Length: 129
Image (cartoon, rainbow, N blue to C red):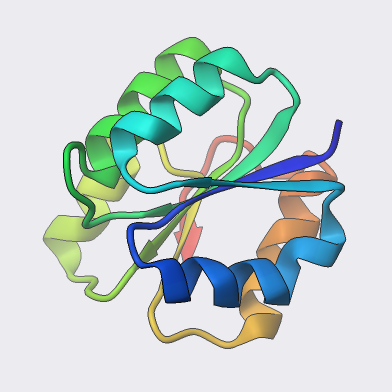
C-alpha cells in the first residue's frame, strides 16, 4: 500500500505536510517522535517512504533512521531539518538518510524528492538542499 510516514513532533508541521503531499499517497501516518517512527516502520510493511524531522523528543531522527535502515534498508527516508552545516550533513549521511531538505523549503523541492524515491531512483546517495 502506498503509505507515507511523517515523523514530526509539531502537530502544525505534520498537518501542513499532510495537506501538501498527502494526495501523493493512499495513507499518511503520523509519528510524534523517533521511537514511534521506528515502531511504525517495524510493524507496517506498507510504508513506502518516511519524512523525518531531526529534532524530536524521546528519540531523534538520526537514531531513528539508523534503526529503521537496519530493518528496512531500501525504505526511502528524507530528513527535514532547520539547520545544515558540514557536520550535520555528515551525520545525515552516516545515519542512512536518502536526502534532506532544510526548513523552510519549497513544496516543489519536496515533491521532486517524493517523485524520485517513489520511482525507486537513487536509493543509496544523500542529496539535499
